[in-house]
Length: 260
Image (cartoon, rainbow, N blue to C red; front, side, top):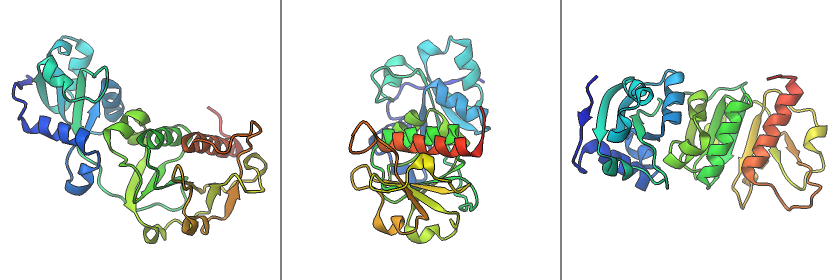
């Protein structure tokens, strides 16, 4: 495939990338393509069988055989001057390659599978880290309620390091949309009398993690069959939500008797 040389900042594909960086949730309103920055994300996408619509490559990187081979898997390749390509990044050290992909179609919620329920998590780094833990520790479905950081935003994508492509993701849901999740719900609280590692966890379950400052909303907490405490002998008031999620998911994996 011969790449198409782009010189104009007004090219529609470049405008789409800039919009994704400026407004991370824009794709939820108008179905715009999603922006993946860096060869790691592109390789994760391709490895899971997701098509790359357009790959945007810096001219200096086109000489690299590995990036050429990766770019050739897209339906269209755009070759940009280095200075123009750097404008498509919010990173201190911009990647030399990126891609635009289509957002996956919405699927129905699945009951009876390991699930994470995210209640108004604001920090994109936390959300991405949780997605990465979910993919690594055997959770296949993530549900984000309204008010949670956009799951496919560039910051969440970078933090998740390719985990998106191993997960069934649902976002923008309300409490009324969760009726299908009849699997037992479990939440954590520093005030719960029952410790996580001393409790028999339902397998599978829906893990509920809430807003960084306010925690899980009362109406969601009321749906939980179990509320458990993560022991903190060091005396800190609370754990970062992404750290708490990783601990809970690992304990669930340990109780299942799974091995690497």
